[in-house]
Length: 392
Ligand SMILES: [Zn+2]
Image: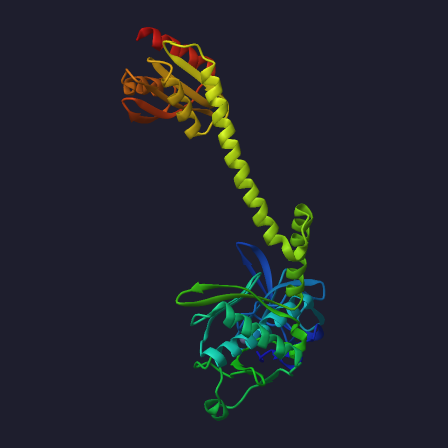
């Protein structure tokens, strides 16, 4: 079969085209039946150069994937198309254009990093996120400078050139991704910024990219992974963040440019409130214990929402009033109870073991004080403790 004519190389903006169906191969697998359709020519780009395959339609048959094998391009469809007929191809061009904006943006950034720092782009991912992995470390200042220069390249509206140089010309050229490639090598040049071997379709002029925004960078395998958005993605990103900032600004009654200070202020206030609350809760426990009768033989208390420190504090306070066993619980019948038990005169470890055995508990401690958690209902626990204390 003849090689498929690649219309996307003649015009990267071709969203519609007509072509003849050369073959339609039925294939039944686990996922159902698909048809692998070969045309005499196509604007559908198969996967390559880090850019995913185009999607769209051939007449009313949806194209879900596109693959290339030995110069022949296969359109993966759910419907059969009769061999010999002419079909109308339509790309999801919005998706393709988004990929081109981000891919050409990547070439500019990678070209600048290569030129200014000598680092290679060793990993490019163009999915929901666009990431580039560079072979060396880049500081925040480096990235700001690269971002500025990349956007200058956009403003200059430079024509993006593509060519298939012959072997001799290629051997004498300097370009990125210079590895032994099978067959024809396609060179994508953005004069003054980048020259790289790449098989994917690109925008015609750098101005089509729109804004190039480097969002974040992190150390990665001895180098730097940079996350980027270009064009309409940058606009969507701006809109989304703007909405968030606007909402936070309203909540804090602060100007959008001053929300970080406002959040810091709220956090400080919260710290003060928390510390005041801790003090007040401790005072409340002291008050409760002070109201207990003096010289009680033992004390058992249930409090709904104390933390571990507060339960221990409560037991310590009780132990000042009582020589027997002091035990405090916090929690609920449904979620279980945390407890602390202490005594100045008795070894608590036996008591704790028996309590845990009776109520599916866990815990441990020293002779004078134990702590842990148990499951059960308050009434049953109280009854068990009453019985146990009478035994002692
Ligand atoms: Zn590329």
